Length: 453
Image 1 (cartoon, rainbow, N blue to C red):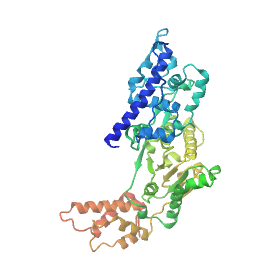
Image 2: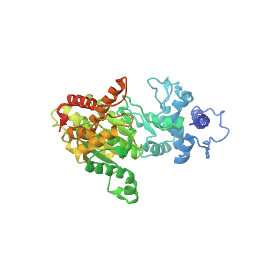
Image 3: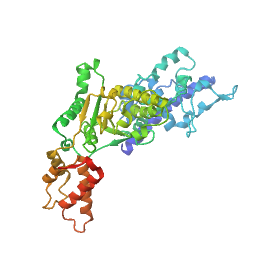
């Protein structure tokens, strides 16, 4: 947003949160029966009309009612006007402890008051039990603010009341309400996935015709799923989402294909780091996965699990607690994959490493082969740009016929010869010998994975 829009948006947020503060103050006035302090007029929600600020547009677009706006405002307050919640730290003089009615918790680093469901219920309903029970429905998973993962509820220990759950706003929407910009989460221990992109285009994808046709079918599903599921009413019989397995040797284009599927359909692709997902501690793997899926649901993301057999491998017999733990993780994965409404791609070098229970749930299982001579020639030609002049002795057709290199290996060779050219005092041409030396390095690195024709 431009500076003037940022200022306008800040003013809108201040008006909204000042309104929520008035409601809190009125609630406290009623609680402490300060009868001499009476609001001069009814506390009415601000009307933002046709204001174009992100927060105002969000309220208007989704037609949030007063209760939803108060819940959202309470979740925003600790981030924007935390001191306005300080009055809820009041202690009960009879018990010398905080008022139970006000709920709330205190964070590890944040010294202020963090509202819980109990806090919001008391602000909205006071001690009116029928009204409190009716208002609880706003915190159900199928309600707009939670269904769209705008708000989330914090974890609570077993057997504690659900109203003690902290009210939290997602990082994505907090960022959007403040800056007006879309949010792309950064890789971290709590979000072990990273956005992957490419400068290549769909037309530069080199695959054998059968593989390309199967991959194109996935793209077609992404383009037409709403027509199929909604207009043609097949959503009654089909589950949303699409699950695909890409398998084949390293460097054959599995990651690039996933990235290009996102690019051509204007969807973000997140590669999940399985080394950070899997934990030896019981229950931690499920929590790590839950963070990924919870963040991705409601957002048009493609989830790409590379080297997926590390987590999606075959289950074992329940001979020990570790076996049971591993099988529980797989069962949890199966359920989350089944329920995910977007595209999930699992990639592996060996198809046989994937548990059969997963295989039955794939809509597509696509084999990525080592490219043939014609495809290898196309890869060489695509990769050697005009800025990399080839000497007359370079014979790409012969190289493509003689060396069964995957696309990833060809790129590694190109990197090597480009470096060789950059090192020379006279940066004139790339020679056949340069390319052959690069190929020999790839053969030494990969051993028998590369064969010479």
